[in-house]
Amino acid sequence: MPRRSNAELSETSREALLAGARAAFARHGYADAPLESLVRDAGLTKGALYHHFGSKQGLFVAVVKAIDAEILARVQAEVPEQPATRASFVKACRLYLEALLDPGVRRILLIDCPAVLGHRAMRELEIESSIRPIAEMLDALVESGELAPLDTEATAHLLNGALYDAALWTGDSPQPLQALERAVRALETLVAGLRAA
Image (cartoon, rainbow, N blue to C red; front, side, top):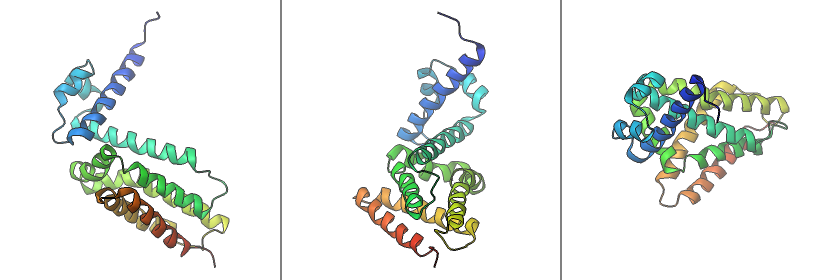
């Protein structure tokens, strides 16, 4: 069996820490996630954690970015870029809301993220992970004539806020799947109001 390079071993360690941290943050929350058992279960040391991520907060940011990337990859896999339609935009938003019904994802992205990172750092992540992709989809809809000309940056911020609150609401609902359907229908109505005359 060929020996793995230092770079491969380093990446394996990083991925093990990320996977363990995601499970720990999802189960215990950021504040109560036990770092000692996390690194022990990965067969590593705290030194490895600090080497790869700098701090517990750095590890948390990496977990948030990984989850955001997974959600975006799912949207890109299931929603075609062309043709740009209002229905495909609503589907992309639905996939986001569905992802946030997972209790662990919800806890990390909606509950702990604002508390751990603070407003400014969270906004920087949001701009990359959701606001910019929403604006790009809106640009494509305007170009295709599916939407009337509009300020896509401002509209992306408004829709992102609506989706964030909808995700909180659906997750808190005693019937989350029914709440999700209601949220999607309301979104369809909002997007229809932006359509070209």
